[in-house]
Length: 131
Image 1 (cartoon, rainbow, N blue to C red):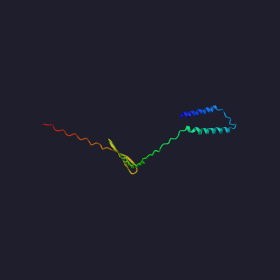
Image 2 (image 1 turned 90 degrees about the horizontal axis):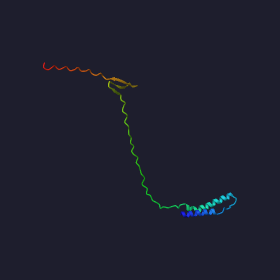
Image 3 (image 1 turned 30 degrees about the vertical axis):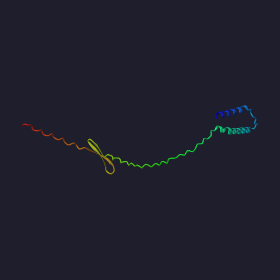
Image 4 (image 1 turned 45 degrees about the vertical axis):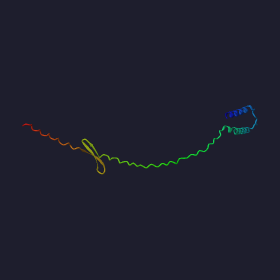
């Protein structure tokens, strides 16, 4: 096929270069029309050789799978527990603060720890033995 195309191309170029220039008249529009007409004829003759032929295939029957149905997942509602209440008592080694309210405002009250109990007197000494 390539050899045939090359042979036709070489022969067309040889004829084109060997033929003397033709005098088509002095009308430029006529020259353009003749050029376009000759190109159209050349295209009709050579065009089918340059385009590949369509290939026909036998039909392929495809079995489509059934559509996929997705179930919506159940709605899960997570209820957050309320935050723990703020501490109303803050302890220290020597006392504590307590949060109190009087109906209008809140305030902290310092409550000291009670003093430690007095030390116990030492137990009386045991009498000496043998007396």
